Amino acid sequence: RLEAKYNLEPSAEIKGSTLAIRAKKYNEERTEANIGRDFYKALDFNKLYAKNHPDNELSLALLNTWGTEIENKELNEIFNLFPKNLKKSKYGRKVNELINLKKDLKIGDKIIDISLKDSKNKLINTSDLKGKIILFEFWASWCGPCRASFPELKITYEKYKDKGFEIYAISLDKDYDKWIKAVEKDGLLWLNVSDLNGYDSSVVKTFGINGIPANFLIDENGIIQAKDLRGQFLDKKVLELVSKK
Image (cartoon, rainbow, N blue to C red; front, side, top):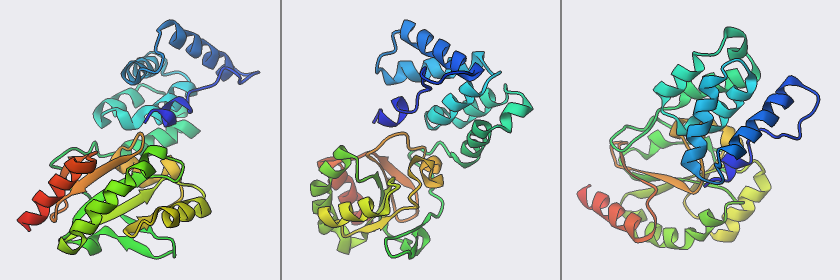
């Protein structure tokens, strides 16, 4: 689940600008801090860097990359440290959009209506699934762990689909053909939707998705009952919910 974060770090290879110098210094400090691939160390380091350097767009780029991991209140507090001109910059606008979209969803929260198109360009509204137990499954054709989990998920789906259980699978693909090829190859017969915007999708930001696979299990009233359940644990929870209907 770390690929999206580490691939988006500023690169020291950028040359010929003040931003390049800042990026080089940032990478040096990050190396000195011995972050390695420790997710939580990296998160704390980047939050502190942004707080201490609210005078450059590099800090905003970091907030844009890591913003889904930061509670909205804290993210907004850090963002407010930046001057107006930077808030209006490319990454400033992205962070502001993230703040407005992100809900810091947790178990017990109610999900808003989601509307995305399927492979035939038909809009699928979650409001039309009212009364069903819904699994919001975030995945992509290029995500090996996501696709490896589908055989077990298909078993759970077959067991409970006639008892009020539905899967609303949101792909983070950007390539339509790769998305559809994966759906067909893996035999995914549940609802498959995407806006083909990858991690820039507003739905991804709303749910605070930072890596995949990820999922949210919603009861018939639209309330989050569980997050990131797999295999027998998901099966047990779905059984519990459909039995209460």
